[in-house]
Structure formats: structure tokens, C-alpha cells
Length: 254
Image (cartoon, rainbow, N blue to C red; front, side, top):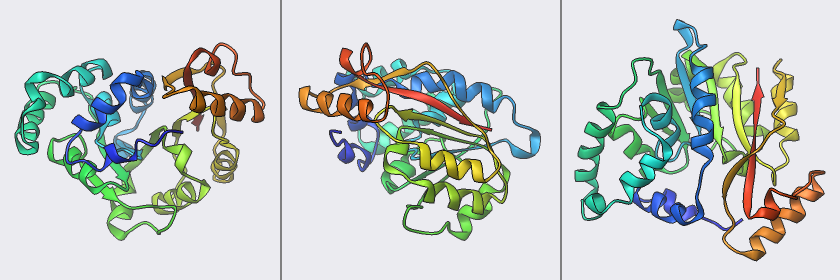
């Protein structure tokens, strides 16, 4: 896949949205109703949602605020915010999200390897806590372990492409009990090892039959590789990757 790694290390989300807009990035928008429905099931003692690979808190923005992904693209790519400093944008965003906060908002915490993205998400009120840690390489910190105590749901949109079962085993070790995991997984990614890990903690993974567009391919080479990978994993790229988009599927472990 074409790397967009650079957009996650910027001090605010404008570069992220500007880079992804030409490719019609959609996954958090597809995840919004699914994550809201799952969050609505949480009991009073477990009303914390952990978003893995959370970047600038996009999933938390869509979960806890009356806003759509299209509106976020419009907001962060508008001429009105283009000349603002990061501090000015953060002040604007605190008011932007505060005015749209849902009455059923849950506690949101995030894990990511990008400290600037986490700091922005916390500064504008999208995340209650942000944890800069790579669980592929490191055990959870004591601060993260304490923060995870009330977790009732783990969400992830796309980050499974960069993770293995190691991250999930360390998460469950830190949480101390199995909790539902809702992951939107690219069809180019083999999720079997992670599913087996979740199953070992007593969870059953339901794999949706339908798929959702993720983003347009950046060019024919990326598309050809994706189609070949999907076919190698036993799926048919016809009408999906062949039509120009990466596709994701919701895997829900409960």
C-alpha cells in the first residue's frame, strides 16, 4: 500500500484530511453507526471505548459528536482554517466539538505511536486520555493499565494492517478480561491470527458478509497488488478492488 505515514506525525489533522481527501477515504464514516450501536450497549461500569491506532481521534469525534466524516473533511480542508496556527485551530476545535457533543457520549481513550496526533486529540477534547505506545514492541505501561480498567469496547479502523495478535494479547492482559472488539479490516489483510488470539480469550469473531469502500487506489500498481493479494486470500476482487477501491469488512468479536 502507498504509505501515508507522514500525515500522522503532524501537529494537527489538516494534513491528514488534505492528503486523504483526493482518495475518498471512507472507513470511519462506515464505522460510525456500528460503533455507536455497540457503545449504546455498554453498562455503567464499562463505559470506556478504546480506539487502537486512533491518530487524531477521528473515531472518537464521530462516536461522541453530531458530525459526519464528510463534515470533518470540509472543516479541516476549508479556506477558513488554512491559515490558522495549530493553537488557533485547537481553540476553534474545542468549541466546534463542544457544541456538537452528544448526550450519550462515552469515555474515549486512544492508543497510537504518534505523540502529536494523540496530544491534539486530547487537547481538543476528543480523547479523555491518549497513550503513545507500540504494543507490538512494548508491554502496556502502568498508566495504560489503570486507564483500561473500565473498558467495554475496543475499536479499530484500518490499523489491523500494521498489527499482529501480540497487540491484542497485551491489551487483554492489561484489561484483565475479554471485551468486544470491533475491527474494520482491509480485504488485503489476513486477520486469522488475530481472530485466533481473540478466540483464545473466549470471544467469537463474526465476519460480516458485506464490505465497505475504504479509499481509492493511488494508482494501477497499488490496485494490481491489492487484487492479487485479495485473490491469494481466497476472495474475489471483482466489483470491489477491480472497481478502484480498497474494501474493508467488519469483524466483530464478542
